[in-house]
Image 1 (cartoon, rainbow, N blue to C red):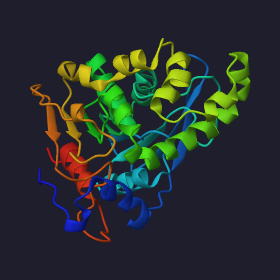
Image 2 (image 1 turned 135 degrees about the vertical axis):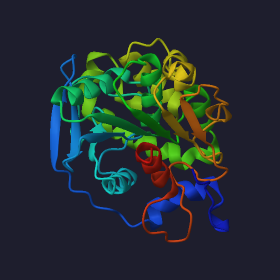
Image 3 (image 1 turned 90 degrees about the vertical axis):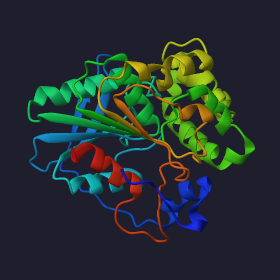
Length: 313
């Protein structure tokens, strides 16, 4: 696989992270259909499909507070379409434009919902091969799931910009230098929690406390951990960090993490002896950035690596 190189002024993790959102031309994807499937706890998941009449399918998992129409997801779908494969994008609970039915939503290790989705796709009996690509949070969900459930019927897996050690990444993002990123996540979190006020009232949670959170320690202590049955944010982070599941993976897997990613701690670049896992840790690239040149058109480096890993063998 080719190494990543970039223009001099793009050799900065924050610039790489922000640059595509400002300068990259947005791709518009017309999904052929949306299918809603239901979970064992009476909630739902919305999956958006691109039908290319193929016997292979790539399932895409988005990042935190993202969705199937996010810019980076649509660019990935556009790049994958060139391989004449069917594509499905899973919208995690509450991310498809409609609030979900229960108090809990999704989190960084929500394996049950990925398994429910894979089981549904297999039940259609259309695809001989199912591949999965996870971005950021979706990457952690993917790696954790295929580590815990090695017999899951996935042919290959790719995780990009994946925060595989949740606690250290949470502490990193609490630093003042990461405040602009954290502010964006908090805004989205508060907006979604405003739609769950009935659930909050039932649990005696004051919405004012929700609005006071400043970082992931606050979010995960007040909401994520207790809503999913964990005693604390620390317990939730420990149980859902994909780093601890890597040795059990037996599916061909690629991990792409840029060394200057402002979201990732040093623990997110492990030396891996598992023969089923390949790693690309380029010096630059930011968080889901990987822009090579100024005003670059076409696919970005990580999208090329994804297609190459999935289809060139």
